[in-house]
Amino acid sequence: MSRPTLLVSLHDIAPASAAATRRWLADLDARAVPATLLIIPGPWRGARLSQSPDLIADLHAAASRGHEPALHGWAHRAGPDGARWRRAAA
Image (tube, rainbow, N blue to C red; front, top):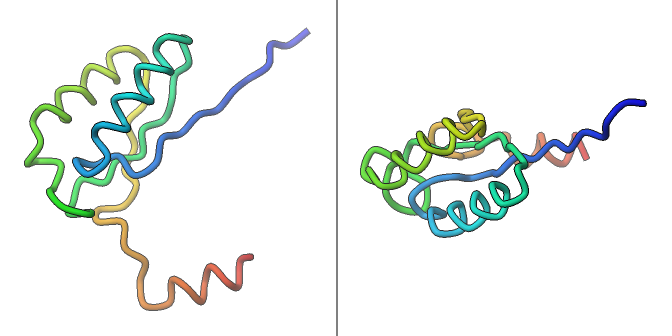
């Protein structure tokens, strides 16, 4: 019998969401659940990731615990056709 699989992704990881990211990671680590970390390195709701060395260190540590970092878009902006594309896909 196969074991159930859970896929977890944390979206919008950036300095603006650092506190929430740390809480989510602590909860996931407590349950031994790895996640894909969807990171926004450019400006999003404030500072760039490069301006947050503490968050960078936390993300490196999370990766060493089995979480997988992934790019979620440089600045998390939809192009001029973004809203129309989302309506068409819905």
